[in-house]
Length: 92
Length: 333
Image (cartoon, rainbow over all chains, first blue to last red):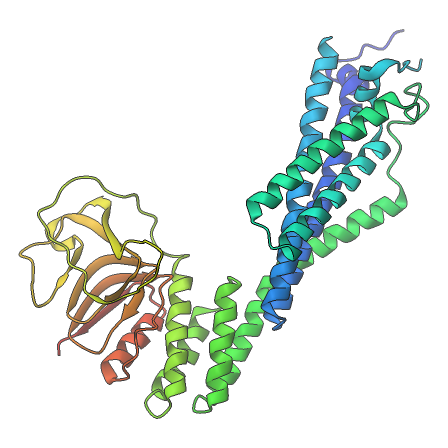
């Protein structure tokens, strides 16, 4: 006798599972990058607090800012492109 | 059955939706190249932030387009979707790295708290010997760093350690500079507790007066100060006041709060009658004259002009440092 599957289980075993796994994997990697940059930011604050020269801390902050900005742009671009291309290819 | 991947658009779809390894290689390299170039531009070449952001943006766009084009047109990408397993289980190394980052992230959240405890410890040590100029110097530096780093320390420790410097201020000029730093730091902390008010519209016959004791002379064009109403209507005896004791107004403003936004002027408290007033970003002076403050907030102010050490200035200093955040103080000279 053929087992009747619900719509949700069909959807899950079809495209939803793949999409979700990719999305979660990308999200975790993105969060790891952003968390690493936050840790770096806090480390700079600690250096400043410990009395390291202001000029050095400023330079490190600029470095962290540059990487943070690049990371935010590239990772958000990744998500946007994923959604746009995924939706567009599904339709066509 | 494996899906055939032919043509540019199929490869682009595969790259974005399935080929994690290639995509994250591209993401990683783009971040590294843009981040390094931006860092060099900002930190070493001292460029403006806008220019560096523009440079990084252009680099990111160019690198992304080049990478995608190379991937899609070269034969390096997979020929079928099944050649590269799109849903590989996460490797042990990846798990360890991600878990390590998570633990480090959680620990780094505790760091500002640990730094604040260190500030408290340093202030307590310095206040044990307030007559020592070195203690005063350490306390000033510690408070300046705490303010710059937005570290929030316990208000009771601030009040108690500050009180010791206030008590010893007369025989020790260095201690009064420390008190000024304490007052500035207290006003920084007050920013977390001040009521959030929306500017009020409407008219009032009330003529507010702010006493200016000095005007900063710079090439930058800024207003001396700005005064506006906030918080809506309040009845006469509960409404805000901002006037001089020597020139009293017949009735209150009929607005709940006055907000004084600092500029180039130093705001003098001598002869002032303030009720329900929020003074923000101003330099404050007080020389010990008559004053009446009721529910006055000092937010992100400096007290560099608060230089005279007399019992009245010490009393007001202690009141500002006290645990109650809006200050109420009266001196009838």
